[in-house]
Amino acid sequence: MLDDSDVRSRPVPNLGTKVAILAAIPFLAYGIYLLLTPITEIQTSSGAIFECGSALQPPADKFQAGVCGPINTQYLYGALASIVAAVGIAGVGAMLFGFTHQVERARGDRHGYADDYEYSDRDRDERGSVRGTDRDDHSDGGARRRLLDDGR
Image 1 (tube, one colour):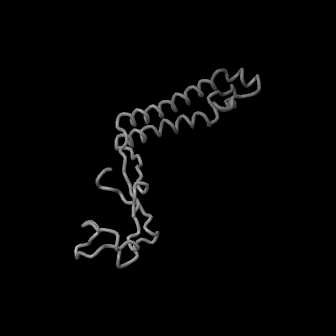
Image 2: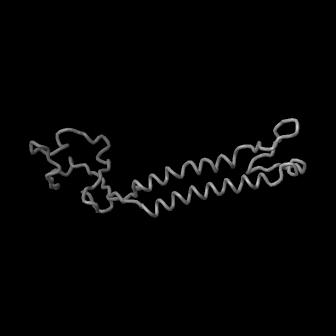
């Protein structure tokens, strides 16, 4: 028999929350890009690109640090601002549109409880016979989950 311990609830984002999360993904990707890619904006007079490291790993040499100046810090702040914007967009979308909770119940094995179990109309097919009693369509022993229509 099934009891209350066989019931679980899981949150599912609404459509607006999903759209907000999708809108936040490019901001998150851009922030990670700014953090990890090497900074190549500074060029020498001969046209060669000067290595300034990345936002997470500024140059350790004093000469490189003097030539690059505050560009590493600027990239770091830009990356953090982009990541904060992504989290903000997703968070505000979740607050505005929210989540719905789907209730699921374990589907028990009815073969062993044929005498004790009362079958509802939903368990019967169009001929009136009980579904699932004539063949083993639950290969996992009835451990599959099904959604409840009553919203409990």
